[in-house]
Image (cartoon, each protein chain N blue to C red):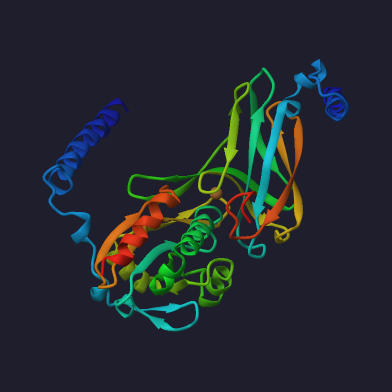
Length: 161
Length: 201
Ligand SMILES: [Cu+2]
């Protein structure tokens, strides 16, 4: 029943996003409908053995807090949210992020050298100029599919190269 | 149980006092060494490695031209390709000035990075960047001379990543250490540092 309800609201919210620019009550109920995703891209991988990373900017456009609890994709058996941290001695390390909390209006940036979506155990290589989709999973179990273009290994942002 | 906690607490207190004292003596306010003299000159770095082109290389052979060194590994998903892409843009911005510059990437993961792997990886970045691959003792020697740290970090799924120094090290053409570029320094800071290093004969 709950499953059905959330599916219905998802379908509803999709319809609202598609046909109505104004915020609807139904849409505002679920977290996925209140997140805007911009500038998504991923770095081409070297084969499937090595991990790679994806980046994007999320924004909470609603008036309630939002929590991103996981990221999933069919292209990989393991995706985690990470942060690259450089300590006082200049040593870089990666730290897992359990979830991302977005206050109303807040933006969160996954960007090279900082927060990143780490993609491990690739089922097939990410090839430059191709696309794949990622799924953001929210705390309320709603989901948002994000199309991610693959840029070259030397890319630094969606705008450059 | 409580007494164990107490003992541990006391030990930690003593340890931190000792550490604080150690810091005072080694790196504290009376520490005299400066960035300019604590790193070895390239002419003293008598270790050899193999380049991604299969040549035997050594820092000694680079003396005569300014040199930029940095460390990383090809299984690195975020910071290494970002650094390599960044350095590629610095080289482009330097234009002709970069002609004499050696740019060397040393892998800290020789267990997975062989000559072929590094060559393939570097083909994605500026062609001036040379990859150096050493065995573990050659890498340890390099780590010592450059005063860099690298450490294998296991993940729960049986793979591992490498924590490593993310700085870029600049050497003058006479082989002496000039300065570092830290990880978060923007291009507007990094490129003048390289220019200065090139001009300091
Ligand atoms: Cu990561």
